[in-house]
Image (cartoon, rainbow, N blue to C red; front, side, top):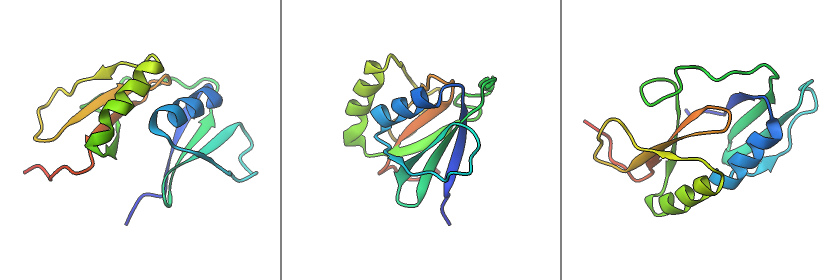
Length: 127
C-alpha cells in the first residue's frame, strides 16, 4: 500500500507551487478540470502527488511542528546540502530536530506554515 496524494490548502496556490517546485523539485502535472477553484497538482514520485488548493481564509494549525502534524519526506543524504541551499535561497530556515535519531534529518516550515521533515532515505528503522 502507498499513499496516492495529500492535499494542502493555500491562500496563494502559485506561491506554494513555486516554492515546492524550487525547493523539493516536484514538477507540476495536469489536473482535472472539475476543481471549481484555483489549484495545482505536483508529482512527488510515480503515483504520488501533492494537491494544492486555494482556500482564501486558510490559517496553518498551531500544531505544525515535530511533535505535532508534519509531512516527512525521504531524501538521499547526498542531496541534503543542495536542499538546504535551495531553502535558504527561498528565505526559509532549517530547523534542527528536537529528538536525536541515529540518522540525519531536519525540518523546515513552508511559507504557508506547513512543517516538513526531511529524513535520510537510507535510514535504518529505529528500535
